[in-house]
Image 1 (spheres, rainbow, N blue to C red):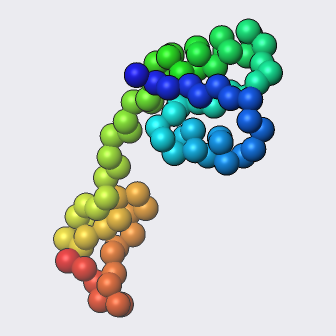
Image 2: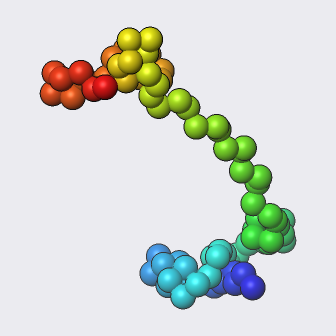
Length: 85
């Protein structure tokens, strides 16, 4: 269950403590009913949907000559100036 701390104390340490003990929000008095309702809606609303995962890009493939090639640029892969096969 989400916890919203409401306090009249202006010191920053109370905000830090609120989150440190597991609070999800901190509201300092005075506040308007609209501010309170907006905060409650933020806390109880489901998170926005995650974008769909991108399919993995092709990392490497084999060229016509049998050399290992970069999947994006199709350049031959080299390790310390030696061709990777």
